[in-house]
Image 1: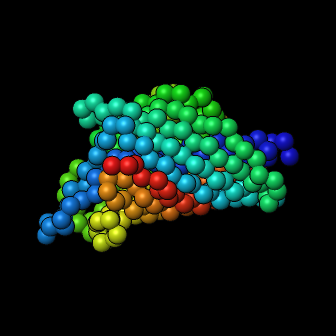
Image 2: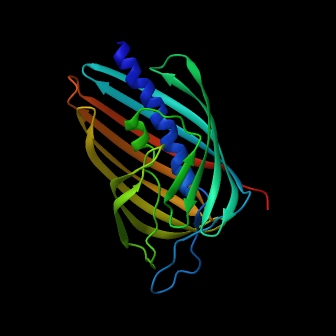
Length: 261
């Protein structure tokens, strides 16, 4: 049971950082396209110095380890502030505070998470400051939601694939990841046009004698230069350590407060 508890604790850290890094990589960077032309639209990044956004993140995580099953429910409130913009990159401060309820029991407060990220205009994470040296598997998982734009005009139905090395660990280093994005639609919504983009992410590898596979898919909505909603699911499988581990996660992210103009 102690080993299982340790696995659950690792998953808490993994999921909290996954959600925050997704928002950092996409929450204030996308510039919603203007008029939809016959040959498509440009999906551009938009850095706004001192902009502050607040999000609510709801996470349901079910962990299977051998014959054991556990479900955790997380609720996070996150603040993301673009502290500076320099040329083609921005530095952002991420602060989140939340709680977790395990197996329908009592709600437990989680410690505050606070760190800085530097991001390029193409969506790639360039550097990170302030994240503690957690388990390496977690370090390599937290960046799977960073978004890389196609660098060309796209129309609804167009897809682009990223299959190269990207910044992954909280310390340093690049790892291979494969991601596919599809611009599903440009919808007319209250407040302006809304880009709806589907994505899938996959990765396989070995870690400390165990093999793992990770798959994630979801949809995010971009409007007015920011992500206003994300709905996603992810599955992590790990084998080779005696008992197999499987984690199924559902995530919903909503913008709850916009900056005052």
